[in-house]
Image (tube, rainbow, N blue to C red; front, top):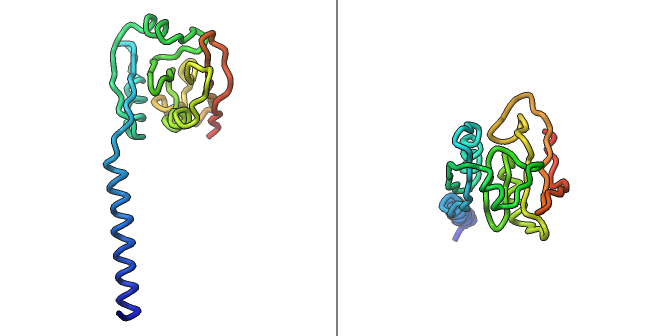
Length: 153
């Protein structure tokens, strides 16, 4: 085998390997997430689209939110417009998909979930410009919070 043939062969192998990885990544199953939203809220749909675009498979239930928040121990101080459940955690509001992935990777103990209280204008699904910083918080059953992630740009 000549040097040129060897390099061509190795290039072909590399291409097949990379192509196989890309095909495998595209074919991966999306991570299921249950989303509960108020029937009057329009921005929740944009957040659901954000989650879909980032590898999640949301199942949306339109419902009255106070009983959902009570069931999942979401205090009024950390509430937002929609409540989601994934991996034993609650995601309250417009939390970025990257933060949800980080939560599922870290699996912190002693918390109910993560939240962006209210509806920050630059959070996913709101997408207002210019960007306005916001903070994602962890929360426990009593509503106590700690900073999980700061988004500054």
